[in-house]
Length: 120
Image (cartoon, rainbow, N blue to C red; front, side):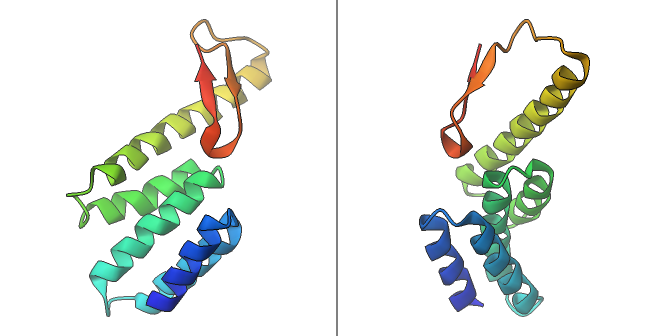
């Protein structure tokens, strides 16, 4: 389990988020109930990968479970907030693209992936 988690971390640093998510998922399946603390850390890592891959709802589910045990880590709560914000942006983009209306608050989005910023 730890080897798969570490290998996933290596792929994360190489910005291969799809491969990292695959390895974290495999580590999570192997961890099961044998190592609950480790599985929550793997869940956190998997949630971060889902967030970076543009899957905020899946990321939120992973991070919510991880925060039950890792409640002393403020970064986990910040990631949960990022999931909510990313999900809101996705829904807003869908609404704008379907109705062709622009928001009065959000002017646009600049950048990509983790460097993405909202222009107000």
